[in-house]
Image (cartoon, rainbow, N blue to C red):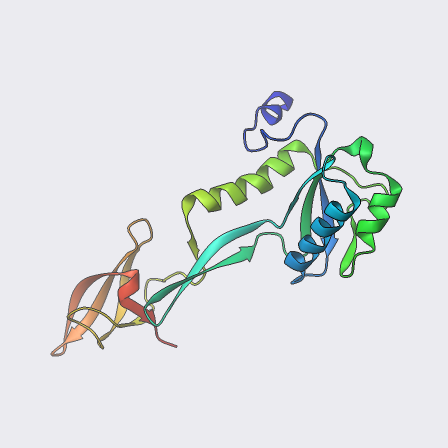
Length: 195
């Protein structure tokens, strides 16, 4: 089991002397805190031993008025990941980061506990997968849900979702035409949820 953990790929940039630490912060302030930490790293010349500050996010989208709206969603709300060389994380650095507004504390408080390589790889792997896979839909379409068609020959019709194909981003919708249910295949961009 131990050998498997060592061979995980996503953290190739992390040498054996670097470890990931998790910093507890006020949820919703992660990006601002990340900027403040990066400014402090530049100002205090810590860049040679604090190598990365990361807010774990994934790309997600919604469809609003027939347009795909992409945004980022935090995978771990209330946490920032910091990659650093453990031997160089002095009490002064830990206190400086912990005293930044909206920072609660490191996991392990004044003696930060590094994440296990498998935990760090899992978190960073999720971030990497999200970047490679494109985006995930925040509000997925559900079989049985009613949608309004906003594009194509059946525009303005309302129907119920019969089948969802996430891979192809297609839906099969049953639309009532002259009182009879007719199956129509549409892509995600041609419909919007009725609320």
